[in-house]
Image (cartoon, rainbow, N blue to C red; front, side):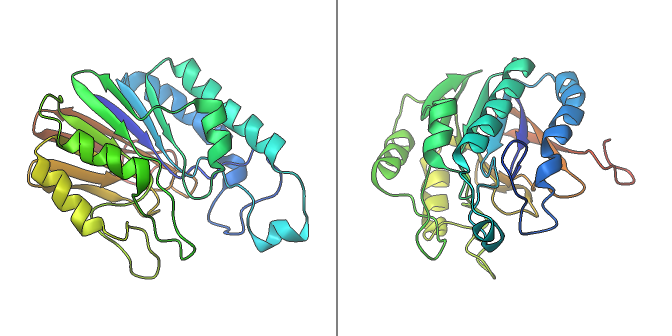
Length: 253
């Protein structure tokens, strides 16, 4: 299976204002997606994953000084993303992140928790974070997690979420789940999961293998050099390529 993975777009196109973090080129993301389209078409992926922080939904002090209703613009931006994906005509998974409005993402994309594709079971988790920005897998999300790991009839699984499970980075900011180590141990121990994809950590984490499971987190698409990743997954082998829209020497253009 070939997967194209983009994360942390932090897009603002119809949505007013700008990110309070200059490195996030939120207002240019729509154009970057169009630039990426020919390369993605050439890759002919079986699946496209957008792993959260689709938009830079207003919550900064800069926005509070110039208040406006963000819902109409955010809805239009999510529809823009949906139409971009529809034009690519590739199965896709879209996951909300901590900078998204969960209700709007559900309204526009109607995300499903589990589906089968190309001999794999895709399992998507939409987990909340607490007041200290620490993510948790609880309630129905935890129940489904336990169920799919224990399913003896499941095809090999691919787990998809916004936050990091492995490695459990917490230095300076809680990028990983509160119980990331325990989650990783359950995932690897189940023998059911071949690949775990996340976002949230803007530097990205190239694929790491624990047991028979690969873990990866794509870098932020909204920051130079505007990267997306592609993976080729076949049984216990994973090949990984990076594509830069602002090319680096020796990289894919």
